[in-house]
Length: 299
Image 1 (cartoon, rainbow, N blue to C red):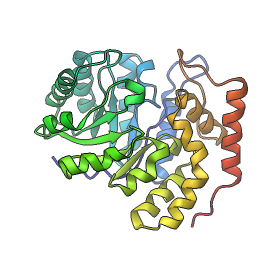
Image 2: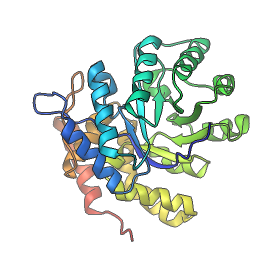
Image 3: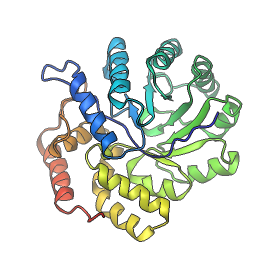
């Protein structure tokens, strides 16, 4: 199976009303604005989209609304983040029926699997759908690493086509390519190693801070794609204090606060997350305001 996934795919936020009920209209507005500004695809209900804070019916509603809002302009990749394989299979099938263009499949939540269990989970979900699949590797967040051996074992599953690599060790990009060539489309998945990933062969970037600064994110990707390293470095150095937020435990709150400061959405999150307060809120606010005041000139 071949996919043309490439470029900047923001992990879009899920918006909530003041009572923390799902705000479909605001969520669609965020998605539509990102697409109109030129992003190449959307990740719906990833970590930043608070997948695990949504009820099963809410997940289906968010995806259905995203398909409606995007209207085929860019690929929609839906996060599959469930407690067990049975639930993951059920959502994968429903996502296909709802019109998703692909799935981003995570390991089953909470339980830390052995490698064979991890491979079996991914294979079972892949066999339940005809959609192309992006695997999501994020050892710091989910306590499991999708190693080269697992990727080799899954290489015969034709609809597993892509890997979102969020390990902070950028050597992974080269090790995976050396072991498997171009079998998997690679995406950089951690904002503060995005440029390194792109230069080492990643075809795209699943980004958190693009929600607040899409123009600069797209310019960074384009500069890397064209080999304009001077421009890429300049944007990256300006962006880095914010990009580090994506690697922190409170990344969702920080990204949504940045989104709110930039007039693009609400910072509201669902418990167990709470909006930032005190010194941390002041720190993130200062970072965002400084970035907004010193934005690089982009033609």
